[in-house]
Each structure stands twice: as structure tokens, then as C-alpha cells.
Image: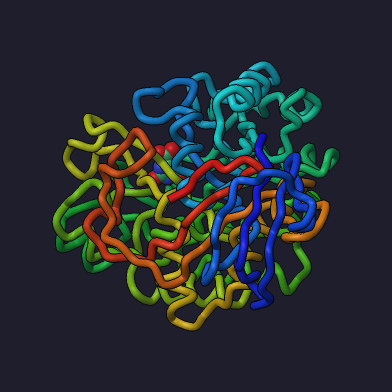
Amino acid sequence: MRDLLITGAALADGTTGDVGVRDGVFVAAGDVRDPERIDADGLLVLPGLVDPHTHLREPGREETETVATGTAAAARGGFTAVHAMANLDPVTDTAEAAEYLAALAARTASAEVVVVGSVTKGLGGEQLSEMGLMHASAAGVRMFSDDGRCVMDPLVMRRALTYAKTFDAVIAQHAQDTRLAGTGACCHESEISGRLGLPGWPAQAESTIIARDVELAELAGGRLHVCHVSTAEGVEVIRWAKRRGIAVTAEVTPHHLYLGTREVEGYDTTFKVNPPLRTDEHIEAVRGALADGTIDMVGTDHAPHAREDKDHPFDIALPGMIGLEQALGVVVETMVDTGRLDWPTLVERMSSAPARLTRSATQGRPIALGEPANLVLVDASARSVVDRDASASKSRNNPYHGRDLPDPVVATVWAGRVTHRR
Ligand code: DOR
């Protein structure tokens, strides 16, 4: 691996200097030999981004994404680590499945793949999966989630939190109560669901599960992470739980920060997602919560889908949208350029906090001598019109297609290796 010399970049705190990389760690600029040079004058150098929530689709749906293509998209988005959700085929519910995915990543990934195990066998919601064996395996699983599905049974959730606590793992919940919505629920329950004739999800389908789960986390003494918070009510419950000292963290997706129910007006299934896009009051609430830290981090919920699974009436198309490549741009647009988040806090929300979630020793670390060389070079003023066909992802369900957005990622370095360079 060739040494690297990045000259003239500014750190998030505004200090400027040259950065050397040798054997995967940061060294003094004078200590590199025959380096690949990157002129970073006018650019920011930030710790590599960490996504707590990615769907890679391999094994099982390789025609929509693989570990190689999903992590290539991650690298283009400035990410040096992604947490790979368990709703694969086969489901990541055994030590063998977890080790298979870790080994596949070791061969093909352009970013660290943190394996997430399922909470229940086959995502069935009934029997706990082999959580302890997955943790003890070579994959070292530290996060469990049935994401895509909500763990509905409170006793199963309590047991998962209790068990995970014994090895300091976190349970990540997809908080969406299917019993509070009719079959085929596919958009936010509001004026728009009535007008479009689409069955809706009320905000309370999310917030009541969060309320139950923070209480269960307190009871069990375990760590709870709430995936993709999308409602003002959900934010209020998390705020209450944090004040009470309950061990809960939460994420918001770029799409819930930026897109709203108006996108659904044309019945374009690209905008069908779980939880659904919400109204302005909810968008304002999640932006405020990400700014004040009630929501700890950004998670992309990058969810690739094949065209044949999206080309259906709105109520039966598969939910989900991709987002790794535009995530930073959307956060800059909605949070930085609006003055709600400064760069050091953005680093906390998109790198340090998600790295702490699974106790990473190598990610979310400062740019400092001797630290693992994970970084993203950022041009804070660059913009471009998003073209879904220019993606490294295998899927094209990109909700930002045709929009003019910040396009900040100039280069990404993972463990000393240049994984993306514009
Ligand atoms: O819309 C969604 N799609 N939400 C999820 O939580 C899962 C994801 C998927 O796997 O397609």
C-alpha cells in the first residue's frame, strides 16, 4: 500500500496542516516515502463517516446490491464503515451466517462492514436468534436488529435487551406497530393519505413502540437504539427517556430530514419507504432533534430495490430508497447550510456517535498521529445535480435524482487505502 500525503486540508475545527498516511495510520507529513499526493487546499478533512444502518442485499438479492457495490457506494459517500442489516437471505441469525458475511466483506468490501445479527430467528419475531454465538464468532457481532420488521412482542424485546446486555451489545429497533395500521399501509396517515386514497401509518405507530421500548430498556438495563426516527412524537419520547437516564440512542435518515409527504403526490414508488415520509412539522422536529442531540446520529437506511419490485401500485411496491452517496450532501443542505449544525457536530453525528454504537476501536477516531487512517475530504461548497445512473449502487431507487444538492465528497480513505477519489 502506497503512502499518502494530503496537503493543505483544514480540520473540522479550522486548523490547517498536512496529513501523512503510512501503513494504515496517520503519521507526520515528513515521515512518508514516495507518497500518492492529494492537494487538499480549500478542503476539509474529516474522520471517515460511519453508517449505522445499511442494507447490502448479499447474500440473497445480489441483482440489487452486493457487498462490493454497496460499499463502493459507501466510499463514494465518504463512509469508511457501514453496519450491514440482517434482513438478508439467509437472514444473519447464526454464527455461520455472520462469519460468512464478515469473510465476504474481507474479500470484496471498500469499507469496513460491521455485521448486524437479527434479534429473532428468520426475523420471525418469536424465538431469539443465536445472539451469544454470533457475538462470540469471528464476526464479533455487537448489534442486533430485525430491521425491516418491528420486534412486536414485548417479552421477546425484553429478553433480547436482557441477553444483549450480558455482552454489551445493542438492540436496534424498527419502531413501527403494524397493528396500528391497516394492511397495505404505505404513507403517512394525514390529509394526504385520505386525498390519495392510500392507507396510512399514524405517527403513533412509531412513538408508542419507542415508548414501550425505552421502558423495556430501563427494566432490562440494556442498550436500545431506535432506527430511523421520523416523528415529532417519537422525538419527544426519546427526549423524555434520555432525561431519565435510560440507555437509548437514535438515528434519523437523510430522507426524513429532507423529503416530505408532497413527494408521494405523484404515486412515484421511489418515495415509498418505511417509516413513511412525513409532514413539515415532523421534518422540523427531527431536524431540531439532530441539532440538539436528542437524535444522536444519521443512518442512511440505504435500501436498494430492483425495478420489478418498485414497478407496482403504491400500496404493494417494496418500501425503501438508496442514499449512501447523497447522505452527506443532504445533511449539509438541511443542517449545515441552514446554520443548525457546525462541522465538529456533524462529525459527532455521522462518525463518532455511530462508531461508539458498536464500540469500534478503529472508526470515528480523530485525525491524529497514530490513529487509523479513515478520512473523507470534503469540498463544502461543491454542488451538482444528482444522476441516479451515475451511482456505484446496483439499484436506481434514488429519491434525489434530478435535484441540485451539495456534492461534498472529494476523496475517501479507509485504513490508509484510497477507496474513492473524484
Ligand atoms: O423502507 C425500508 N426498507 N425500511 C426498512 O426499514 C427496511 C428497508 C429494506 O430492507 O428494504
